[in-house]
Image (cartoon, rainbow, N blue to C red):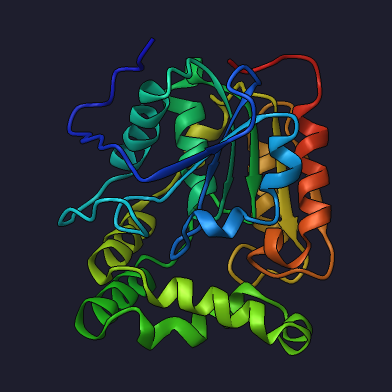
Length: 268
């Protein structure tokens, strides 16, 4: 059942939560950089009514182990596969946002037998420039994640949402600031080195790409590139949302995910 991890990949079992009926089709939710399983709280009730929802903390985040870097995208993908193996899931739908979307693309390209349908939210095949990610990693290693939290959260939500819901923004900032510095920095290094453009043409999972109209981190043009590179992919833009569109427009994003996963085919 297991996909063979690439040479050098070091899969570990991440902290995870599971909701929904054990016999339902499986959906693996993969987080953004600096987030934990809590980022999917608005989606889980509706998704778990139809699916076996599995969410986990990326290595170096939340309750997952934070081994010293460097990490690779193969390591992060191997962690996801190790979790599916532990739960006895041979094949799962994948929904990832930002870094989670990059992991989802990598899994669909390198472990295609494990991926049924794919949803890629607010992500890019290549977040550049590499120097900016190296600088962010160095800052976090020297001074902690809290020092960048305000700037990052300003990209997560539109100004209007931040004014209307300061409590939700504060909760997201606290989630980010609690991330271990080395875990966050090591994942920054992964993003800075990564170029998934060559992998897109080989993805065969039915794919929905969701962009947010006001996302400064992964603008709609990045989503359009992904959709154009994956054969048969569909592309849509959610209005009035920035990078964490699933938190800012939860009903819209949840509806898109459910619609895409309700097509023919089931993951087990």
